[in-house]
Length: 452
Image (spheres, rainbow, N blue to C red):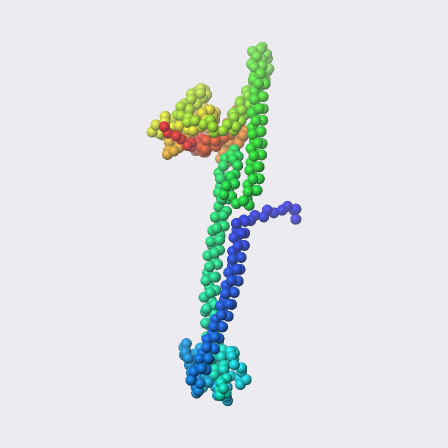
């Protein structure tokens, strides 16, 4: 034994269904068995009363001297299934049919009902001794009686057995119905965003689950407070670092104007490059903190094409420096009427980060294709660069903060795509990336759009 405990996974719904199903089966069998037994007894009692009634009718009638067997009725040609009325003389004991003895009536057999063992079958016998010494006998084979009794008992037992599966099925459906609010709540939690800490509603949930849900809500509150604290720390730390880095940058600029050796200038260049990277990192940290802290109250209908144009104008000098060509294709009847409900500053950040990455990772003298395509209720923005792309296994990781793809010598903080992912999640947009063979790397963002 390694001392570890194995997790036991079970379903309350499944266990409850099985337990109640077994209980219904047990009650059904018990009820059916009881009905079978009682109806069998009632049927036997009815048959005995029937024999006694025939006996009394014949006793009180004028037919008291019966020389042979009188067949009251015959079910078929088999003698053992018939009902017989027999008048036995004092010295007669055998009941004969067609030359064979059905059964023998003992001499000292008392009046009333008896079961007598015959040669072919057992017989239920009602007997009455007359004042003349003769004995009046009404007999019927127990085969016929038992068949009648079992048939009647089964008529009461079988419907109960047939109802059991139906009750189990209805019960399982009802249990599923009872657990439906819990399943719906689970789906709502699964569909919520990573930054959505809305409390779980207790509405429609069974009260037995309320303590558990309340505990989850309290945990969500604690996590929300912790994340807010972390965001405040990052924002405050980045803000506090901004001033010292700015001062260091100014000092480096002043040093650069002084006369110094080539070796010292090279070291100063490295120092300035490090300071600039750290300033960019601080700026990106502040941007990420603002995006995460900002809610949806600042959203307005932002013109898509105007925003895209603004970003391209700002980044065009970087593209011209690498001699890149940027082609914009629009597949829309009237692109100027397309609006996206968003925070304008965040939408600019999104486009700026994506296009800046396309410029940064494209080969010199390459081409960047930007395509705007409108469909019913949404618009997609496709940005295709002419770079070497990203390894397939790394694509899901690029949205993680500070993640840098291996093998690239580009300067960056690893926060740009993390900021993009936060913005798209907030807007309810989707983003996907693909390596295009012999073409480059493509990023596609799908927005819900409003057309005016």
